[in-house]
Length: 95
Image (cartoon, rainbow, N blue to C red; front, side, top):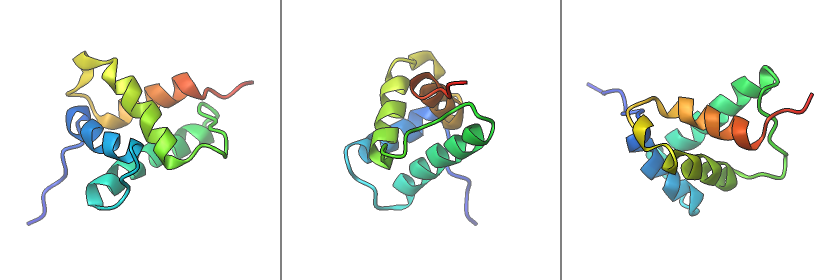
């Protein structure tokens, strides 16, 4: 039986740090990328996050990973919550 992956920040941030340093192969790295892009897509639809087209996946992962490093008390939260906070802080849509 397949189990649901651990989506906590503590687990996923170490994986996303690998993506930030250029490793993008494998299921876990894909999970990190998928969460970041999913959060971005949803927030972009609501006009909350506007990432320039020139920013690649590696740069997105670095922004999220760097932000998470400043939030040690939030390691048990869902990674998607911190990914949202990191991206809206870095790339808010301008009205």
